[in-house]
Image (cartoon, rainbow, N blue to C red):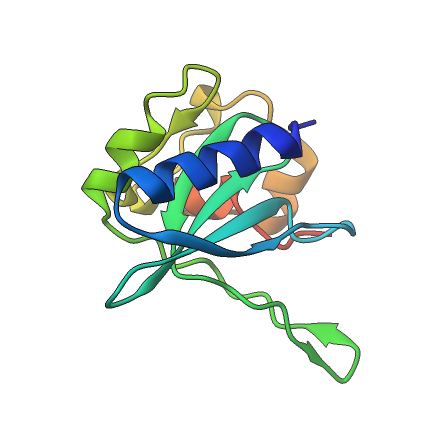
Length: 138
């Protein structure tokens, strides 16, 4: 389980060092999604630092709101974005592994990620690494 205080600290420090400001945290409280978001606002856009809640993996994506439609959650995949300055700053914290949009949009190799539940992989059949690591699976 991830230390949320540490994740928040990283988001604040990264935002400060890249000219942005943290405007919100979206903490996963239920079964899904399996990631938390720290929303950083810049002059021209907002991005989310996403953190897998079970492993120390970070990425940058478009902010995602979980919406309820007839009691069901809208659960499409995250859209990962290139933010080289932010990724570089996030990579300075040794406890976390930061993945680029290119890595996350690439094919998923289960052998490289043995910590992901094989039953989930068999059922959900993720194609990309991003789908396997950051998802709304129940």
